[in-house]
Image 1 (cartoon, rainbow, N blue to C red):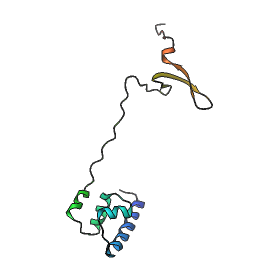
Image 2: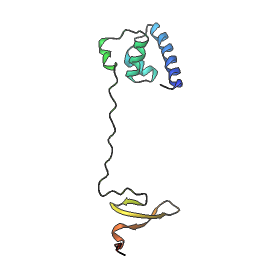
Image 3: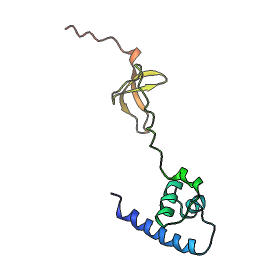
Image 4: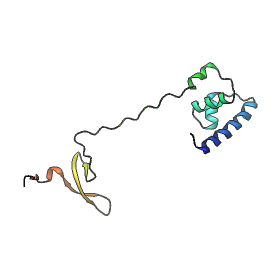
Length: 119
């Protein structure tokens, strides 16, 4: 269900459009979309809801195409998913803290001594 605020604007837009149509202006899907600041799919919906006769060429706006999913960025094996590690100049960097100016300080992973977990 759409928010009430949106329906109210749509109702006002359609009321205004009825007056515009009655004025004898050249109304098209494109001119309606431009006049009311909506996309051409909404313009088509509004005009057909008002009973306005549209040419066959306007059928292209009858059905909105399905949304295309956004590409997700895949993390490579060299990227680290940890709040304490960042990539800095293409190298893994452990963030120990931040300066008062916001710059991170810490150590690059390749500068750390290997850890011996056998003990």
